[in-house]
Length: 328
Image 1 (cartoon, one colour):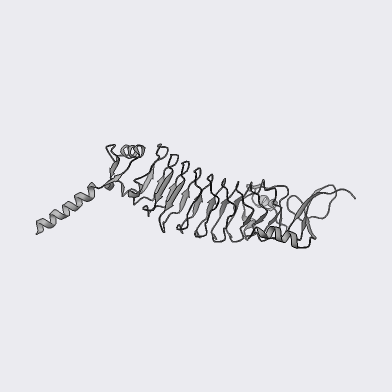
Image 2: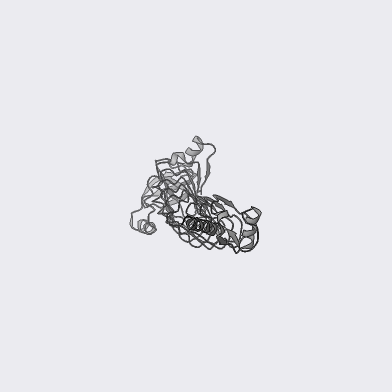
């Protein structure tokens, strides 16, 4: 009886250590051979050689298929930057903390349920959809230079850094991201952006959008070190924390601050719009009486009427007008 038990144990061990994982991409398998995880180019690798790896970096290896990655069950850090991968399923990699997949041809990517992923770098791919709804621990998402028309980050309460530049986003709801510190959303199709629910935000780039409404009154304006709204020709009034706040205040307190704004941008605590819905833009501008409430200069500072000067008239309906004043 003891011999039978010993035989069964040895048989099970032999079966376990002889299990193989299918690796059809020759470039991927050759990389594993070069790293001494495999020895023969035969579309397979011993599973026991790879299932304990925690780090894998296969940068610029001409790989087009990562089939076999599902056997790397202990993987915490995966970098396959600059390859030719179009689709990827990481649902079996439940220990993954960091993913770097920049410069590929990704059209589809899926993550596991309740994945512990904290950092994702996906810039420079062909993604038209991105589902991060099961990544509750996600802190950094870099998905710039893709084909995204929508992006839902409402299930990512730990998100601190979001870069979604050069996509086709028409809206971006950040009300469920209270930890957000850094936001880059340049070169999209955003008409409005409400950042009042992001009290730690201190770096913002939202250039080159058809933006009409920006609410950056998050209680932290005095700590901003980067602020860029250049090339937003339809944006005039920007809602801020305190009266008479202007980018000049940032440059005084922090000479290294990077401030780039359009000449028609000005700053006020009352813009007449809350930036929560695009419908507000037309409705408020058409229904409210129009009265002059403030005159500001190009730095957003409230001033008195001055002849022979470019000034911005701010009205009660949220609209504004840039005026070159003349001597009486």
